[in-house]
Length: 393
Image 1 (cartoon, rainbow, N blue to C red):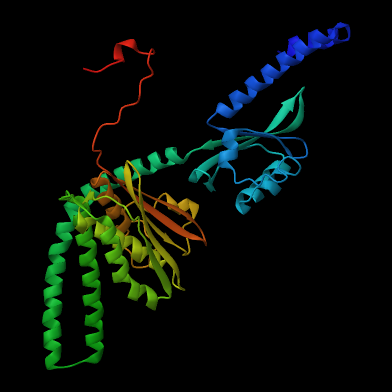
Image 2: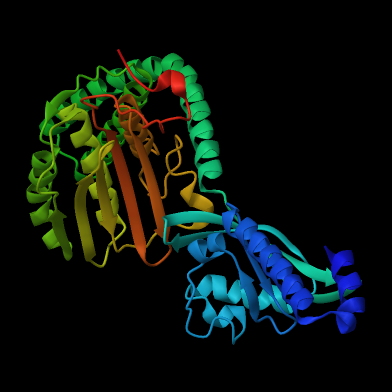
């Protein structure tokens, strides 16, 4: 195309009006074709000039980037980005001298919370830098698959370890507990405040170790999931009412927003209740100075969705991919198994659980449970495309 344009430019002075119009139509068609290619790409592409002002932004980039369109093509790119962290990144990267490859950010986009990978390279023309090319790739599903694989591997290793060790730990713990009780009984005959305090600490630690062992065993044993069609909204409302007094004492405003016309969903009440209680208590722990906690339900043709959203301390980007893994905890006395068990329970129901978070602004845990399909949905076939599939017996 470039050579064609060069030849045309050499002859333009000898062209009549009709020939020039024809040339402009060719250029217009070619430009539309290039725009269609760019707008059809799944990856985002943005091009900035030498002053870092955008001159091209394809449709995918518009979906990914939190842009202000007021003066998008009249000011530097970072001034049009509403996300502060991303704005600072563009300012630093575009004013720097080095290319940047695969820098990832968690961004709230028009498609929801996504993990985006940014690559920034010079735009070179005639061996001179004429601006900057920004490539944006959505790596959300890739990161989710990697996280699921890590969790599956961790659960497998947990099974191997816990199955062999938990029983061996539980037996001596039982023996220690019995002897502590005998000591406490003996202390009643000859009271000693100091010794009583020591024995109380030992008893508390025994209880804590027992809880860890029980969680280990629960994590590795096959779950006896017995889902029945039930009103999951009723369970969410029940837990909200149950936790409201505790939340109020902690300065937390707990609200439940339930979908009005939700249909029954197959789930095991015992296990889903355990998951929701764990998420609610985790959210409350993330708000030591109070805040807001929202339990929200919604549904579509395929899924029933439960969201647990808090205004707490949030989770760092480097930790968010690890929180469902065994032993990982940010709590001082946590076992690191609560969210692992929650993940396992939801997977046993055929659903999924995910989290989106930003430090200082809170976290959102999203549970999706499959909704049974009453009838199979077929894609409509266009008449004439597949003649042999035009009718059914």
